[in-house]
Image 1 (cartoon, rainbow, N blue to C red):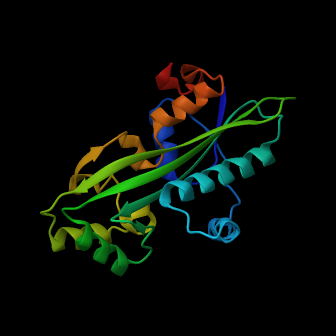
Image 2 (spheres, rainbow, N blue to C red):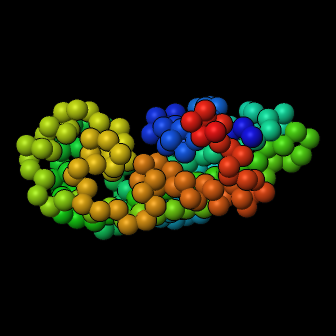
Length: 215
């Protein structure tokens, strides 16, 4: 069974590979800011983080699924993530200055990583079917991370382009005290949530294993 990852995220790709899946990859053509702005204007409210990530995950998966068409036989996976502390949404910091300030403010604190998931089943000659859900995981940062460690971590460039300015599966991992919830949620996608959605659409998770080491 084929799987298409509607994402350019190296972390999500690696996560699926570690789970025995070598997906096709297609970059979704979605203007995320415009999508959210349109929804919020239509509904006259600001979307909370769980709704925000679910809207974008669904839009990404739908855009890629539409391009693949019903000649594709398999599952399309879309995802989006946001990190939240005390009601404040922390996206990608982009600059070293922003990442440094964020890390100094986050140490010793706990935030929530919200991850939206959309799975679309494409079958030749049949209408597309979708299942979607949000997963959440709490992340607690170690309190004794030093300014020097933060500066060194930021200098690697890793935290600049990831939600919340941290990773759990790479250089940022030693600065994280604990994760409550599915750890893969913090990486970029909750594998257990994806499995539930695949099963909801009639799929069998082991049938997605297509990497040599999984056979």
